[in-house]
Image (cartoon, rainbow, N blue to C red; front, side, top):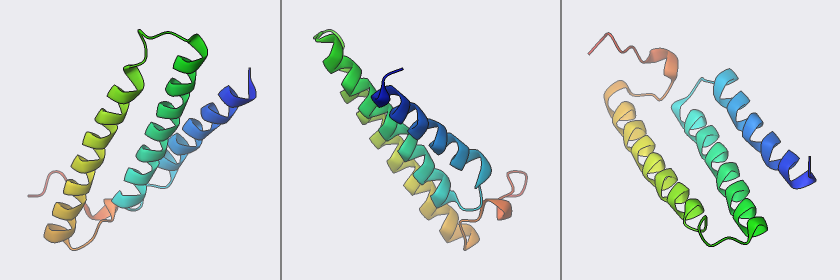
Length: 98
């Protein structure tokens, strides 16, 4: 495994571990998701550059567009949750309670 592949794989795994183990606040979960998407974007960009292929050149930009949509939706949910519940702690959120 190349060192760059190991670095981006470990970045993704660290983001996934942060998402699964440190789920106290919604903002920290969103930051872990953004870190995972950033590592995927950089890895996909480097993979496209290594292949020297133009057929895969749109893939990183498509991933970046989806990542921006995910970030804006997450921030909108964060603002709505903070306004209705007063906090962004995930333990206080109950999906069964309106």
